[in-house]
Image 1 (cartoon, rainbow, N blue to C red):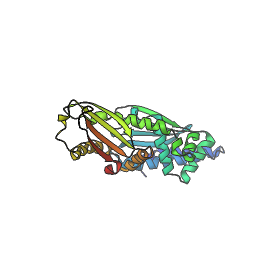
Image 2: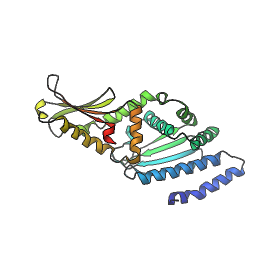
Image 3: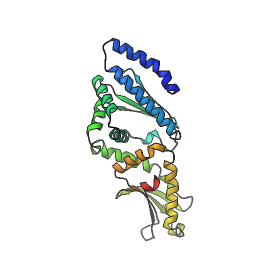
Image 4: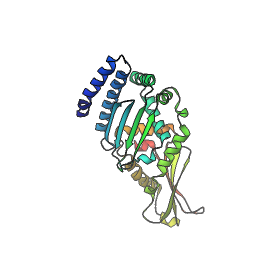
Length: 262
């Protein structure tokens, strides 16, 4: 048992006994489940220290409060829209359909208590996302296509587009734009003239794309398949990097699938 669990255990025990003494059988269940979630979060931090610096869960008055601090500077809270967060959570719920989930959702529903997740990034930006019992139950029972699917995909596309400058070469290029077609999110680099990339091959371009993308996902650890699973469910199979210089100039294009990044 780690230090954090040792620290919160007396408080949890005292609260549990107080509620039990008053005839409340549901709140102790919520407290017990919050302790279980806290233990799982501690394991997640230990397994992924480059992605998460801290994570904890605790019963706090009328909710389960989860606090997560992101350690990776490439992930910004401002880029995580509420529909995208809800969709990611729904993916996780679908991956953990067990008895504990059922117990937690039922107990929270009985008390009408939400789970409130607060994310903080390395830049000090924070945002709280509230998951009501009704929302959690919908995540359990409804298909992913009914969990803010279009809004979540728009949020993911916006987050991916925010990193477009990472694909800008040091010289010769004038702009980078993004697009999505046929399962691939594309970074389109526009040059002043095609001679700027004339000597490059498809293999050279793929190496450039991989350098950026591997750095982006290097610190995900055990959460990499979770994130890529969400990408797949939103219709993203991978990425294109495209170099062009006007309609009449030759285009150079490469593809990086999600399997290349596992």
